[in-house]
Image 1: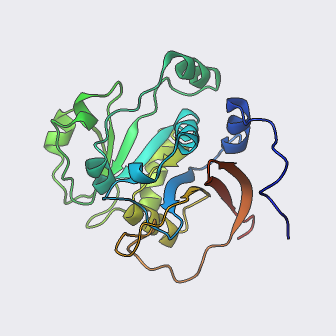
Image 2: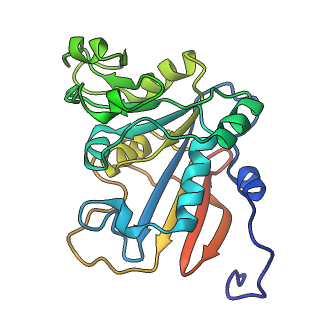
Image 3: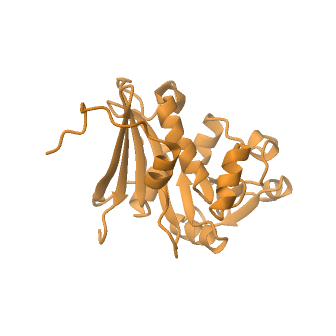
Length: 248
């Protein structure tokens, strides 16, 4: 057993430290999925249906670092609608850093939707520097989304096959995948054994009964063992990073 906190204060964590901790493996040959979530101490994924009520500036630094280092930002349609998603915002300094890392200037948002029910006039399509990617099914209507500029990927007939979806992203060179939720998408990724890393911020709040957990939906037959890779702490908020156990 080890005492991680309280301890003697260490030097402040720099952006370079975060980049080292949260960087993707080098020379990836397959899609690699990092999932970002914030949770209350009693396991809630949101307050008043939004994750903002659980967040903190330290958590947002980790969140933005996930975007900075990714090829693509993956999100479920429900979360995209609830959180009012639009194109990623990257300032000049972060753009330069992405280019130096061999990444595109701005990562696209990829939305997973079985039904294809997205508003082509919404900010996801109209307030973005790069076209969104829509991952959907053969049965979903696609013409309006394509006319709005979306890159539509078909990955399944009745439901989205996430393994196939990741393959399609990988074929486009989008292997560093930063998933921002929501709980249904996270649950499906766990069930399909596609999660390589979980970045979980635990907020020092009790949300009470009724709020959903960070993973929801499809049952998982066997727990997926992860290894604790790093722990950061600020103002009562704990930023945990778990990686897939090698060989597990």
